[in-house]
Length: 130
Image (cartoon, rainbow, N blue to C red; front, top):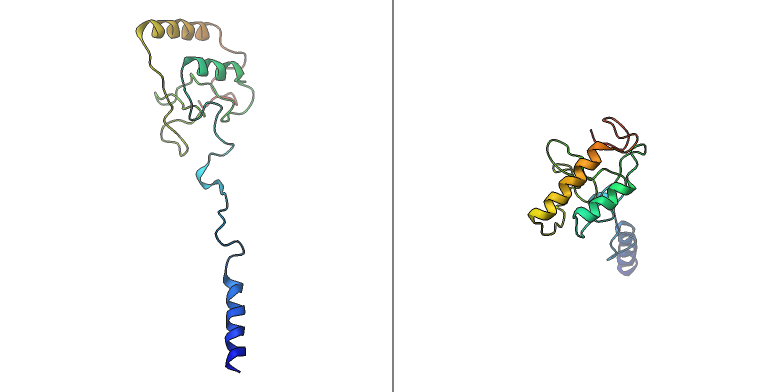
């Protein structure tokens, strides 16, 4: 009789154990909604920013794959996924070395972008943070 009671207790205890013991289940708690950008955890330099800018469509809602890498918000630049410092999924980008000559080239590129913005690039458009 004691054996049957012990067997019943052991069998019923398994009802409270998880079905998959030792298996990790991936949750979205530690990942950004919609994922991270194309250059996440890789070099985030002028070439990669120009690539992201070329693919950016201001008429499409902002996402990790559709954002203006040259847009600023509160004086800050976005990371390689379009997140700004202070946002939950911001990651410090991997930045390359830079010199004065390269800075002058980037300045000329910035002036050209400002002189001829993409169609639809205006504050409040779906692809902008501002």
